[in-house]
Amino acid sequence: MARFTLPRDLYHGKGSLAELKNLKGKKAIVVVGGGSMKRFGFLDRAVGYLKEAGMEVKLFENVEPDPSVETVMRGAKAMAEFGPDWIVAMGGGSPIDAAKAMWAFYEYPDVTFESLCIPFNFPTLRTKAKFCAIPSTSGTATEVTAFSVITDYQKGVKYPLADFNITPDVAIVDPDLAETMPPKLTAHTGMDAMTHAIEAYVSTANCDYTDGLALHAIKMISRDLVASYNGDMDARDRMHNAQCLAGMAFSNALLGIVHSMAHKTGAAFSGGHIVHGCANAMYLPKVIKYNSKDATAKARYAQIARELHLAGDSDEALVDALIAHIKGMNAKLNIPTCIKEYEGGIIDEAEFLSKLSAVATLAIGDACTGSNPRQPSQEEMEKLLLACYYDREIDF
Ligand code: FE
View (cartoon, rainbow, N blue to C red):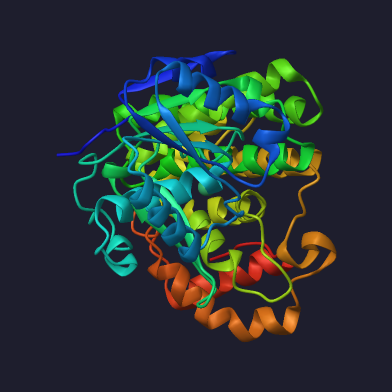
């Protein structure tokens, strides 16, 4: 038995933000990030539509990138005081992810963060509020997924929360919002979406319902991401749909160790965060090579290469062609080949090596590892991370 869950309603296309005026409720809290939605006028428009719907509206602003447990608690408190029956989260992945966790603490003030970290262990939500998500970036697809990533800064660890209870009720995928993304954000979020689709397709939890979504997303992202990065707004609009399709796939097929490694390296080093999508983009070629030692995964990667019309007269050759294709996209998107090159070398080599063993252990324990086609040993995970630091070839 398997489950396939998506939002009840998904509005897409230019201008679909206006669907907010058709929500039925009394009070809406709007959760947003640091200001781009306000600056570009989308926040005012959203508030206006909610008021047209007859709702009292409160804002919870300034959710930081990689939202913290503390921000989640502050948001939950604001919700408890206001008593919304709609939570409307708008912006990049961070405000929407934060709002999902706030939602759980709003409905269950006594629940612990530790218990929410256990996969598929959430209490039943929607006793107080429903949830509408409006993405402004084209990558995380959190508007359709059962996931949220919250960072514990004291421990320097990102926790992926997973439960179908936090799959939003309504998603509004309006490409007008994504047109505001700067190029670097477009590149990073786009490769995050590519990683979602590829990891979902080779996941041990893949199924007929997720395969079609994943493959179509991979084809769209291959065609449109570089053009979107270079300012083609029609390609940008299509990327907004492509990332959402990838999200529908991975929310139900789960992910793999590219994400495990990105989660556990993301906030681990004092030089700075390794941005999620950029980490995925760097690690993906290494993990494809590692996973392709598994026969089923190899056949699936080869199928992706065939769908992309890449050349190769054997499955091995097709897997290598797919790896070259990903590396080629990364190069065109100005994404570095390895952690050592990231942002001019801000991740210190000595610190990386000193934390390698602990980060590898955490990555193996990440919620995304279970559905990866190969289960890495401690030694293998350390070698994978080293390969991602130095851009080494994978031969194990
Ligand atoms: Fe991701």
